Picture 1 (tube, rainbow, N blue to C red):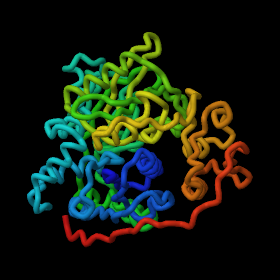
Picture 2: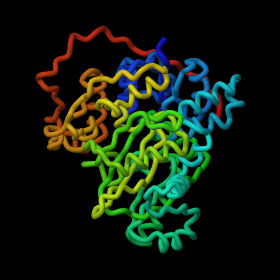
Picture 3: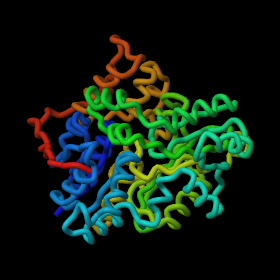
Picture 4: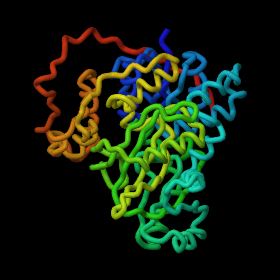
Length: 427
């Protein structure tokens, strides 16, 4: 019998749909907890899709786990990871079998002692520094009154980051005290209720509702800026051991603080060593990512944060030691690893739809490997429609064309996943 992977996401990000396809190809039976309108519906790989309810998230997760009895849970964003941590802590309230629920979360994410460390940027930086890993100076800023002293100690330029945010949405750089004060106020402020309601009604994204109603203020950390360029690493790990990893240099981004759109595969001993040491010392399991800055003059890798969940490159299969879906399947199933054919031998990868949305004329769409999911044409079309709505770069004259050498077989009749509405009650 196939093991079941339950993917949990609180957002409508495309990468979680790509991950679902990759895990299905690796051998998993796929179930998903996600908001309505998620692009995973276009992939037809999920046996069941459970509706995520932002006002009752723990009840939703508990119900999906009880119904699907997954063998592993894979969070697709930071908030999903935090809610799995909360579910673990409050398991007796949400499960008739709390011991089984606890075992599942530990098997999926690792030792529970790691949970508070990976949730706090400042705490994680302190932990990494204690392990002898190269990190920039990082401090927690508890209040606006504390900020001036922090600015003196950390220095300028300074990077302010709000915990629990992803994709650069909670990151601001400041070069002066005035900029830092303004950035801190914006980052620490609870989401505006009007913004949360708009996102719920228009984008079907309820992630801001709870924080807006309860006026939650995120913890903000201040980090010294490292001059250089970014690198990112994603690993599959199991009980503190790294089983497969992908290390990339970031060549292009959507914006200065946003996600990568073009990456280049690299071997970097310092990145590899830091990732393995964190995984080992925290006892991590599942899929997680690490962000680095490669110092301009020395090339030294500074670890700047952990992403305790799947990242946007997790679906890529690039050969021995670089096939994350195959490594996770082997760990969960206990079977020998079965590698997929590498999708490319080109070290430069333009991520779809991100680089195309950034610049339809980008040279990397021609010189690099353009990571278009041709095997799921409905997902390609959905990504293009979304990019048309959401980006200012879209031009009516532009389209993504499938290379002539790749031709799709006749499509089979559509097989839609069943969506399971959940009576989530209140959280």
